[in-house]
Image 1: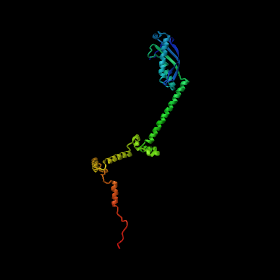
Image 2: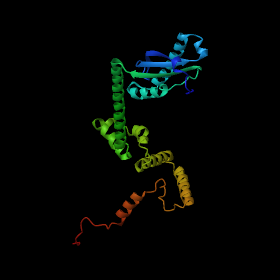
Image 3: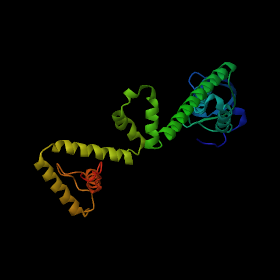
Amino acid sequence: MKTDGPGPWWNRRRSRIRTQWPTRLPGIRFCARGILTYQAHTNIKAGGTATARAAARLALDELGRGVAQNHMPEQLTTAQESLTLATAHWHTPKDTPGLWLKAHITLLLTEQDANRAQRYQDAIREVTLQLAQEHERRERFRQAVFNSPDATRIWWLDRHLDALEALDWDLFKEKILPLVGAADDIQSKAERIAHTLLYVWEKLGNDPGQHARFTTTVRTVLDQMGWNDALAWPALGEPSAADSTESVHDDGAESRPVAEAGPAR
């Protein structure tokens, strides 16, 4: 786009502009009012005054629409300043060589369009506020409920206080606890280990041979890992540590007679 002078002032023409250009918000337009000044060189003048005027008005309309469509109705002042910078000085449109123009245009927003734009902005603000409140609610809920596995368990229990028979901890562990981000807490690990040991014990059944083979395998693994101080797996029929302690306590207790017999007479 060139900005050199258009030539003698007496060859210039003027045209009053009254039109509308669409804003970025569908259905709402800026009203454009002002004066277009233009000058056409020989190649455009050959078509006559009407041709030169039409070419100038079309060039201004394209420029004005490009500015208006980039602005929302509430950006009226910014759109006006952008349009002024684009049209205040002599220039020749890119696709119309031989045509010079400049314009002094004022953008307006009708009262009806201004009210419609305000209702749109109010609706946007209401939706934005609702979304922000919902986001804040979820964030606070996450911090309060899913902050730790224990807090999540308390929340789950509290939800079922009125129907404890419907309390499903399997569902909790499958669906809820992974959301905490710390489903490998101590209690969960202990439960998994307990379930694993219970599964193994049920598989072994009452077969002494199975118990013997499993015990040998466990002890071999513990020896290879250097965990000789670990609790050994009890063999079938072998008393547990608790049972042994109770047995020692019973056997070691001093027997006391119920009644002392008197001397024979």
